[in-house]
Image 1 (cartoon, rainbow, N blue to C red):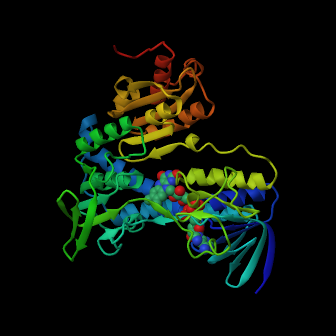
Image 2: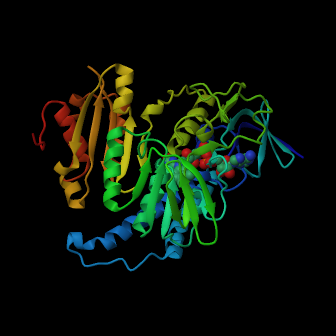
Length: 456
Ligand SMILES: Cc1cc2nc3c(=O)[nH]c(=O)nc-3n(C[C@H](O)[C@H](O)[C@H](O)COP(=O)(O)OP(=O)(O)OC[C@H]3O[C@@H](n4cnc5c(N)ncnc54)[C@H](O)[C@@H]3O)c2cc1C
């Protein structure tokens, strides 16, 4: 048993934890990073990166299948799942190596093992104590299920779905949020018959209602079925398949049931509650500077209530490192965090939905620009649009985009939101032709009272 002291001890080496470690090391702090599994956490090994690799393989499959739309003779011979998985795993292992290199380059002490927090400032790993002037809790999240729904066999979560070496013929996806619609999109492109079940009235219910309608229309065209506003009541499985029962009496037969009903905070059994960390419904409660109720103890990432996104974790980690180093960083505006759902078509947004803006400001001006007027989108044969939401006599407070590849446009949209730009600020800025960024530019031109490629 040894004692090691450091400026900062971080429990959990996922997006939030490692970003905090690297920034703190850059700022000259000594850092111990404790990770029980693989550095990189959910995002790299079980989340963002593998899902986006599958979605890219799905896009390639669609391109092969639909070549004739562009006058190219091609057909989809089939999907080689081991081949897809080796492509996906190759991406992960390359990034994983890079991350391990960054730990060394930043001189972060990586401790491999499961840590337990012992207040006020210690993490214990295999009997050894790591004592920090400050401690950051960053243990991430896990895939939730519903009461009575056991994850086993044909009932899986994203963890198992990412490593399947076969494609289901029929699959039911429970949950029409981000993870659910992304897997639905992949499996549909790979040839599966997909049905999504969502208890709320629409797919991607956290997005602007307009985006949900656009996505639902596109999914209908793609043959992806969905049942919204209906609750799941139970599932039974045997060697042949799984039967999924719904509240309205429907029974859906499938090879697999993907449970994508959200993620819970991974906070039990790590000593948080025992050490007096204030928690609610399993989440660690912090103030806006990510400080828990215990002095010198911070929390970042999915264990803090709010958007469960990797780049939120990165930013929170950086924020905490800078705060500890006395740099007084600016508090993170949760609404300014861009959100992208990478199904086909993509849904991307930043800031407020129309409904949220109306609630906040009493009223809001909106403008919709259809991708039908955007040259590049027509070349790609994608439909969708841009929706802007503007505060009364104020800046643009919300941008929502739907269409193939529009996730890449969120970079500009988040600058507009976070810099509190008025339509008149953006309208004179020039967008390259023909790109999809022009759709954003055109929407701003129109909102500034000088529409260009707009009918009626
Ligand atoms: C299928 C899927 C797709 C996703 N896609 C996206 C996306 O496209 N974009 C996006 O922004 N986000 C996406 N996310 C969310 C993103 O992965 C998470 O928001 C992000 O990983 C959270 O980072 P974190 O640091 O809070 O936690 P994690 O990444 O979960 O890391 C926590 C780490 O702590 C370790 N740990 C836990 N307990 C202990 C302990 N006691 N001792 C030591 N180590 C411990 C774990 O092993 C883990 O490595 C996706 C998630 C899933 C599941």
